[in-house]
Length: 226
Image 1 (spheres, helix red, strand yellow):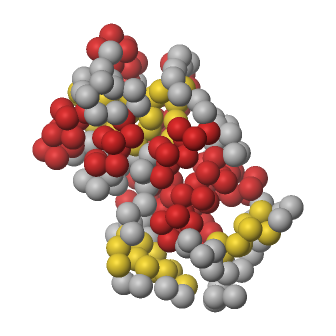
Image 2 (tube, rainbow, N blue to C red; image 1 turned 60 degrees about the vertical axis):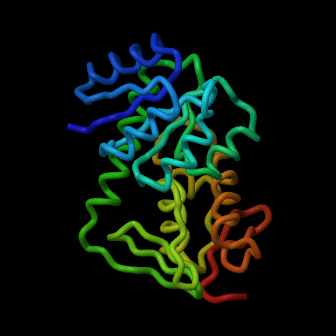
């Protein structure tokens, strides 16, 4: 049974989310502040984390940055913040997705299920091989990425995006192709492709040697440095 950590300082909301997910057969745990959430992630394994952004002691962005170093499980922000800057910061520190309050119960469940399915496909892939292009090496089996031999921590979504780009190196991919292949659902905005590309570049490719923007068409991961 998948176990989900719900982090929200408003206990009524946390309990509501818990009831919704437990009705779907998931096991849940609740943390009402950031410090408790960090402690729980250190002590227990969770398959997915739902994280509020606006909390009084440590905000969700800080919590996400901390626990991303402790787990590769999907992290979904549940927040009233909808501006692009907040999303960019969230993806930069390791979030995989956003759900905006007030949310529709069915959408919450659908997103949770989608992320858990994708996470299992990645972690359960035992064919495991590596893709190595230039300075960047991606291991499909161990879910690890290295640049010049140094490990780079990516969120689940960033890893899937990088893998898709590297598997199709040399091919120009439209935003729609990328969105349909990596996100595989209708929940969200195609603009999230650009947000995650930006985050990947910040972590792996600040000089844009590998991830090229093909204006008017999409993106291409080059086979060799151009």
